[in-house]
Amino acid sequence: MPVICSDAFAALVLLPVSAKWFFVPWAVVLFGTRAMMGRLQRGLSMQSRAALGIIAHAAGFALLTVPVAIGASVLFGFGYAIVGPAAIPWAAQAHPPTDAGRAGPTALVLTAFNIGAVAAGLLGSLFLSRY
Image (cartoon, rainbow, N blue to C red; front, side, top):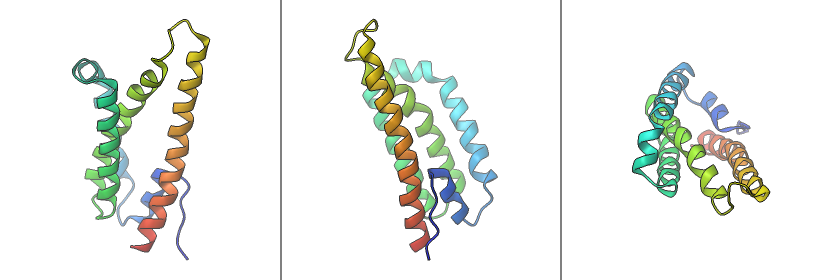
């Protein structure tokens, strides 16, 4: 019977390492990347930052299959730090700042992000429990 986890981070229980080796580097990279967001925002478009974050997340999932917890956590932390701040204004830019309709795309991005966190955990835990 496979173990099924309900969110992306819960799949870590299937790895033969302590969770601290994932979350400590994840938090350091997350906060470090967010602290440098000004430089990233000036150097890359919203679309580029979102794509970079998604690629980092995918690479982090790939490393979880090896398992390389510290490398995966660095990629997850970097991806997580830049996807949200890039995707939300990208979705809302179609509406002027004074338009009440601007809340709709923002809510949709946040909902999709949360559904993705749950779905990724389910799919990742199924994959990790089989291989």
